[in-house]
Length: 454
Image 1 (cartoon, rainbow, N blue to C red):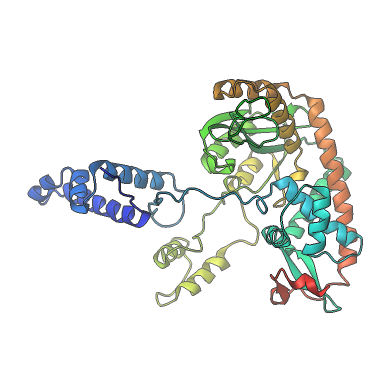
Image 2 (cartoon, rainbow, N blue to C red; image 1 turned 60 degrees about the vertical axis):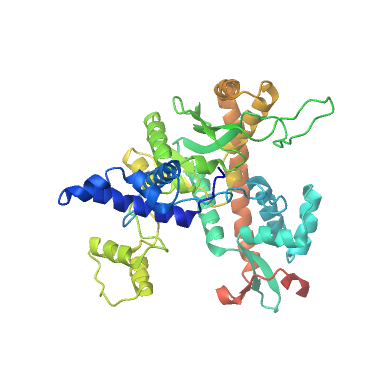
């Protein structure tokens, strides 16, 4: 029998039919109807013309999606996937990693510092000199857009490539905070945390292809089990004792380990890590979604009108029933605090610690990234069996071998980088202020051809 694909919309309909029949099976006021629907999955299969195993699969998927949904205003709705829609083509020219993205950003800043106008054409040439990048000008422009760069008008009518203002502001705020800690002789340890992953076929180069090497041996592929690693450390004492988290997950060809983490796992680990700190500390972490659960949940932008009304009523915020969805969204927006209040920041503060958030897309300021590189290189060197059990044992051994001196060296590098960049931000501000005459979003351009005016 040929298995027929069942798409997400059909799954949703089958799930609703099943739940309706299930409700009828519990109707005590009508015993005959309840008896007929006593096996709701079987009746659903017959009514919808699908197999019983398909109904079981769909109901399991729907119930699991509801159970795993993040808490938010209004009832949770099930989510389903369509078959053969999981594969995403890797875009080698535009999907660059965080370190290459940092090279792009710093190259643009070099143009600023040298009083030159950066364009995508000039940037592509410079970037190709520094790396082995093979992409085109169009691909470079797409990278720039993903890093939130746009063209803004200058006082001479030209357009200059500028970074989004809020990202610049967050970077300066972070750098000022970190530099002030050193200048004020703050003695609290600075603890850096992050997550990373290691594949069971982890080897040097991070490129796995299904082919043979010069010796005729098959090169391990990137598929298979993966280890997620979460840890924290400081130059004062190295890794936080008792806070190592290493667990397995099946990730297939998906290289984004963030999809394997969630706020519940991270929150549990975060509290455990704080309990192992012997003195008040400063916690530095990025803004990953599972790091950033808000203290108060707000309706999402795609929330239904009824859910927003329910949320407003729960918060005792006045509104009139005739108000449109757009008006209700504005009321929610007005109720939001100017600065986001994160749940984990509040937990840390209650336990005597302070949290400093890294600016988006700036992993170079986190020394644990250098520690991860050291660990991965060592694992790649020693990994010979490519078995997940052996790799897991190896990862734990390599992590335990990282010394305080390793941490001091990596932290020193990042602190020097932070101090240097903070000085450059001040100088760059003096350079760009007389050049830019507008910060109006309407005066920006997304066109990759605008650099032809230079």
